[in-house]
Image (tube, rainbow, N blue to C red; front, top):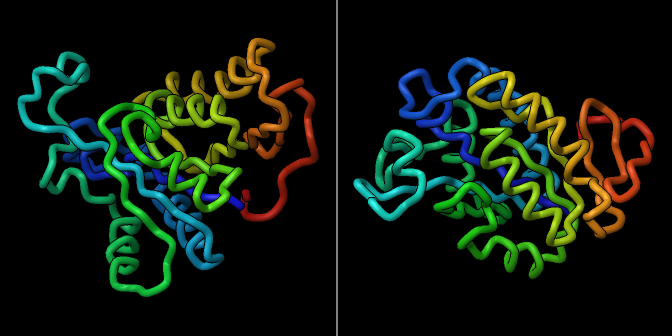
Length: 213
């Protein structure tokens, strides 16, 4: 069983007027993220919107010293961006869809949430990750998922970051550090640039065909 986790594709992270926006690079993956979400929903697969949430003037949150206020609770900045936002609103009115919204307060979608419980309850073993930022929340979510034994699929055409340097570094990090010899999990697979890799032993597998999952 597989699931799609849509990470932080919000107005504050993507829109031109966003408080901590990726700008154009983030906007350029709008179509692909929406397409993948639609594919998972139409296939009756599980979809999680993992969405950053912060409280105003939270002096105890570590990000307060790192970034300007963003994704504040009860603000438009937390709404899903563009076409994905429109599609999410449609899903709220639909019956029999397997879609959840999960608030998160840290980089990883697993930290401080019940996402792992939700996935285990549904016998999910394969996670597809999309969203922003490739080198922050997508990266930390992928690493946590890997250590928990999930098979990981990061869609390169549906992730982005504040800078191309950070984006490319994260993609390379997925290919190298996650499959380092210190990691003992066997059978996890990462799909990047059309090629799948066995993360445990660095062996290439057949080229991924079709829509990417």
